[in-house]
Image 1 (cartoon, rainbow, N blue to C red):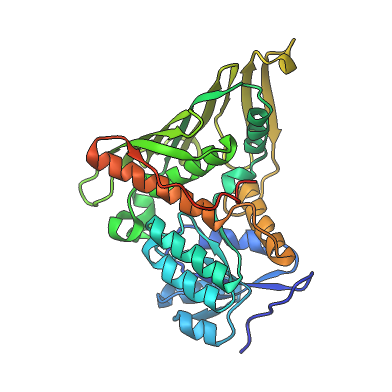
Image 2 (cartoon, rainbow, N blue to C red; image 1 turned 60 degrees about the vertical axis):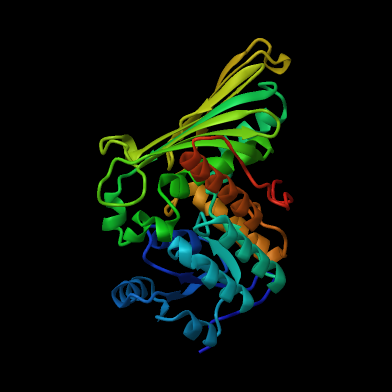
Length: 370
């Protein structure tokens, strides 16, 4: 059976889902299904029950073993949702088989694993992207534009808060490996904080040079922390405070407490994301001449609900990578971005252990920040 249709232009691109013991594969299916000329044709999952249920629900071919899938022809794109520690080996194998890589964040349990993926993709001539879809939100893009245009002057500080769900959701979602640091890498900073680290890097157009971190463990059953805090010092001087947690109240709307803010020498920008399909409002207060007569603004974004992971953001993330594959161009979010984020995360954990500020290894390739 030949699954692959490696062709350019407007011809159909085939996708394979690699790994189902994760919260997101099913919610990615509507995103793939909404893009013309893209078809999910296979799933690779060793758990027979998970595999059979997915094949039944979505009409795809199932494989228990990655090598069997590759021998059957593979696909154009491998969307990888494996436990973090298992992602590099699978990604390297798929890249060598000629498949483009769509990696669920953080792509590996450590920066070295992410580097292996990027190196393998480069050698194989395939593209790799990571699921940092918050860049795709129009509110985030407007915030970045305002910062680049100097509306708030030199950015000196920022805040990022992301409290989402409880540990129980990983048990219920058949992804208990998330609670084992030897497989996941760590707690919420590895799973949630990476989104905000990437967003601040991208919005500021700058890299983190040093961090101070502190992890707080509340649960008694698992070896990961429930709460992670960090200060990120960027090379141009901005200091960003992160509050990342699995301890949001069950009653919190949509189960997520989200907040992003930037403070500069001329003003401030803040945004409490609604996440999916609701009205988003960005608040701006600035002394910049461009805002004379209207120094305080509330910029409203009304997005139509989109079915699937992360709604509009997820849809744009998948669409942009498919376009990059078709046009053989660099994707908006690259493997180098994933490496840079994990370099920061590792420094945060080093700092939490040492009690000192720790320097961050700079990624060698910064071409991905567009």
